Image (tube, rainbow, N blue to C red; front, side):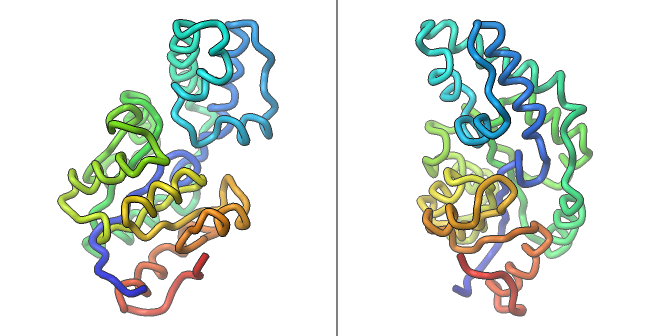
Length: 228
């Protein structure tokens, strides 16, 4: 699978930063506001994690009307910002970003996290400087699993999708990466390996710090990574 690799595009939540706990807390705060049952952490991960917040609350409070779903989405994103102290930077993140940047690769993020909150998370953990482009929730015509956010990131980076590696922690990431024409790399922080195998991930990693070796292999600079 050797190819030219000029860029690496990351999902944010669950890949670079562990934000599952504050997102779960924020979702339940929004649900309480509208008198809806709270979700267990496991149910939140199954029903909501990795989805655009607008779609999440269309499902969870949509029976109360479009206005309620929109307000629940806004409240969820407000609360995610309030609970940012509960998020954690993965131990591999800074090291991997530094190594990839030192190799001359362009770096970008595509995330369902909305404008303002995405920048706040990056600034909070001191990693904004590594990225040459950022595509936030709602900026592309369609959210993942559409390839639109990844294609937009490639346009902003000035690379072709086939010159990019896309890394995500959810099934929608694999589907979007493959549809865009990128090498689709799945990280098993949020889903089981078997799910990614079924979705057709090109490579599956348990740790993001295996990514530089994988890219070496793709570029013909060494052997790295394990196929999905």
